[in-house]
Image (tube, rainbow, N blue to C red; front, top):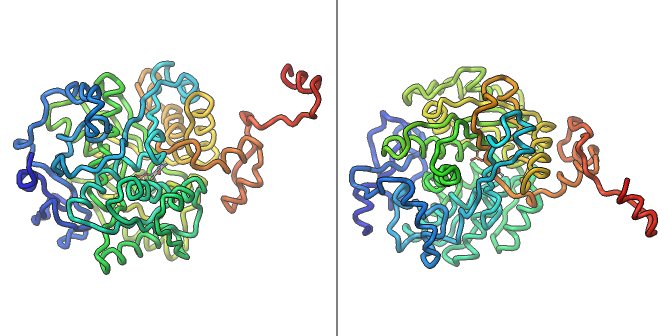
Length: 467
Ligand SMILES: *Cc1c(COP(=O)(O)O)cnc(C)c1O
């Protein structure tokens, strides 16, 4: 496929169906000047040579010599066909796994064998963000960017920084807020050589600044306002289907922060259905932390809907107005989803409609319990990812998820991202955890697995082993 061909069948357009302007894929835009909404990448599918069955994509995994086939994103390249092959930037992202977990099934309350965990922590930088960053890096290369920037609660910056260090294509600049940032994530941005600017403000402040700076200085913006990131994140769903031998599950459960992932998942299923590659769409559950529950309140309490693109924006404006006047700020130990104003809100509303979705909020206690279950019955995950297991459990208790449903929980980040919280939890060091949170919410857990202190004495050590 040549460059010119891509420009003929791939466009950028406002998510809103009434907007009329469209832009070429080799331009940089962040929002539609017509309605201020974020742009979507749209394809003229009639002109894209998409394989007739999803199995054909899976067969490419055998081509270990071709980096595009090794990538768990670009193996599916005809489903995100905005770039010519020779421009694609890959560092081997997306070699992740779907595994059943009986321990998690029992915790959630579904039949053993029906609960699956999708380990996105296995990506090169340890979070799902690499799925999107490979696509944004590809677009950055298409437009000849020399500097790329993002604001981040940690994982986006780690991902951008590794793509810059591993490819040498551009310099990375990351903006972090002064709220919670897990050290595992910060250490990555520093080690990969990104210029790291710590803004004296929260994530939402850092994001609005980086958008301004990118506009002023013509720097390439890699936050999830970038529609190409979401194109890459669609591949997480392709791999979930692949992991289930191309069968569609009943539920996809994902933590919601800026809502890029949930938006991308909805778009993936919408397109697969349109292409006739799947015959039904799974339901989507987006899980907020109770301390960062903008989506939950807007959708489940205020009744905000996609409504064919006619979104009641006054509801959203009122919500944010109240948030500011009451000085309410997101606060959760799951720092990756500690977001006040989710930038992909409108796109997520579309995903909820496409997937007959629901939104739930779960307290930090349940999030950390979910996380501990994933550790005991699997490869582990970071706090935010625990929200998916906690959310599935809540939906099961509410009777929304049935015991016989097949449920896939997306584990967005690696277990090693945030060791302080994990160690604090297992040592029942709730003071330490509550000091991070700034409020008293976490209770000691019966499932804690703290180290056993024993004297340096053979008999006493053996006694400890046998106790
Ligand atoms: C970014 C992130 C999230 C939130 O994803 P959104 O697409 O912003 O909703 C959740 N978990 C982890 C580990 C993340 O890094």
